[in-house]
Image 1 (cartoon, helix red, strand yellow):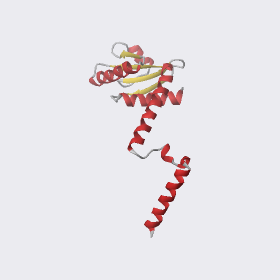
Image 2: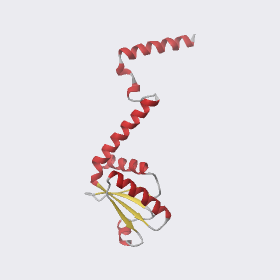
Image 3: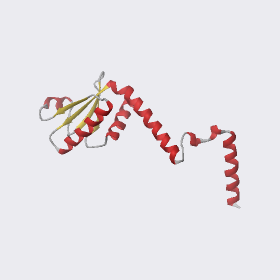
Image 4: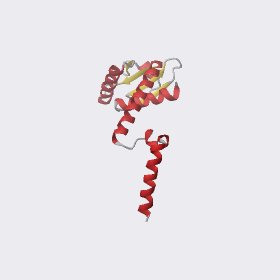
Length: 146
């Protein structure tokens, strides 16, 4: 009995969606594998465009020392900057102690994002993370503070 009702509902709902496609929420939140891939690709492209639009308002500073963690983060950041065209200033804390005082740096390595006009500083990471995660954080800063 219950199965009959659910089957009837599914058939009626399918007909409703055919006649009223605006009611289909899978347009915005796809449930199929390919729909999810397409939605994710669209979101990534939109995020890249948004980041590209706002990134000119900021400068990245990577403050490092001579540890392996710093060297690894340096490699990730330089590769990301080269691929995306970001401006990155590399600061060796051991040679430029004054800069570390300006930024009030407590731990190394640290990747900072500084607004060019206001001078507001945003800490993106104190540790080794992927370029994708760095860009997610950069996008969050751009969206919330531009």
